[in-house]
Picture 1 (cartoon, helix red, strand yellow):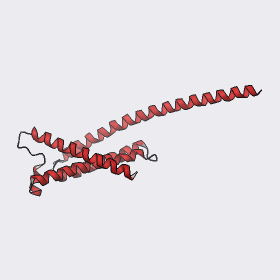
Picture 2 (spheres, helix red, strand yellow):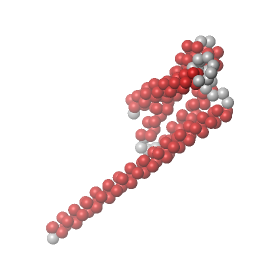
Picture 3 (tube, helix red, strand yellow):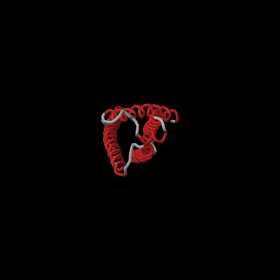
Picture 4 (cartoon, one colour):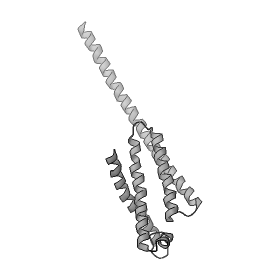
Length: 164
């Protein structure tokens, strides 16, 4: 399990960097101002554009690592799907404002609420998709089990008749 967590964290770290920096570069290119793929507050705080970009890159990677590593909770059989989704959602939704406020991605309570609503809605959609997918699989397995049981009952009846 620990190996899986580390593997997913590494994959999430890379994806977090790609998404975080990709969004920052895209936003900077189309903002109409000078090219600055990181918040100005980071450059002011660290005194260096390179350091500001590095910190943002590492924070994006951290966020991705938490998001991906946290998915192992879905594989724990003792935790129901709804609880696993809620736990993972809370970890992701609560971490984002901390990083967002610290790094200057978010500035107002309105932005925090909007991001929390968007992330929670995304989790609800994922939960619905998984719920209906699992429900379909359970129905298929139950039907298969019934077929096997019916076949077994039929064979038992046939073998009892042969014995007579």
